[in-house]
Amino acid sequence: MAARFASKMRCMVSSMSLECWKAFFEIGGVIVLFLTFVSGAGVVLTSTRINARQAQKLKQFDRDLTGAKMELGRQQERAAEADERASTIEAGNLQLRTDLENATAESSRRQAELEKEQEKTALAQKEAAQAQLALKQYVDLVAKRAGPRYLDVKRFLESLRGKPKGSAELWYKADDTEAYLFALQIRRWLGPGAEADGAGWDVPEPKPIPPQGGDPRIPTNAPSDIRHGDSTGLTLRAKNLPKGFGENTAAAALRDALAFGREGGGAIIMLGDSTLPDDHFIIVIGQKQ
Image (cartoon, rainbow, N blue to C red; front, side, top):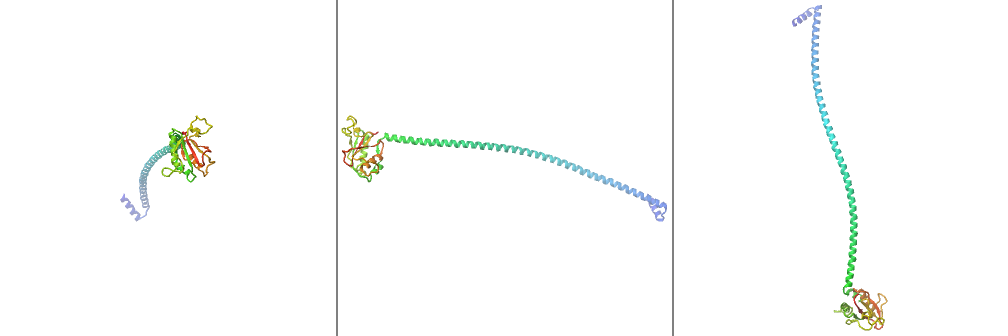
């Protein structure tokens, strides 16, 4: 074929006859056909490779899409689980908030009850303290009444300090030890005292209440302390009785000293006795009331 092609080319070169032109066109057709074949083969091969690459890419895309779908599914599952956990946590928080509110309300209620109980306890303690104080005062009063009479020396001397002085006789109920001891105590502090620490009055030794005399209106067979004016345990007889408190007289000073400086016993009876000299007094000490 190559020889034929070369011969035809020589013929064309030597002379351009019809046969040469025919050969030329035949050769051109062959060449065109060859090129067409080559082009078609190239197109087929190229298309095949392109299709193979596209198929590979399509497969890779499908795999990537499948993986993405699977990852999306897993993410959706995780999201669902997260939503479920969030819902559970929210429900737990709601229950916790409800429990906390209930606990707070219960705590407030119990605190209010505790405050009421504390108020009741404080009131009971106050009432108990008042009752104990009243009981103590009563016991002290009973003890004073049950015990012997005695002087509050400081108050007794304070009532007499700086006031006019006089003289006094002390009469006590016979055979009454308590009355006799009380009379001795009055003499101790109303008189000069053991170490010149008394009020400085003239007070002789106490003596029993005279069995005779006294108020003629009272039967003679009545006890001598009653006939001489002692019906409460202590009587002060004087010529001139004080008219009120604050008088600067010996009678007022002695009355105040016996009234405010004495512990135990009843009230003091004041009796006028015109037979007594001025600023001379008789203190009748009867049985303790």
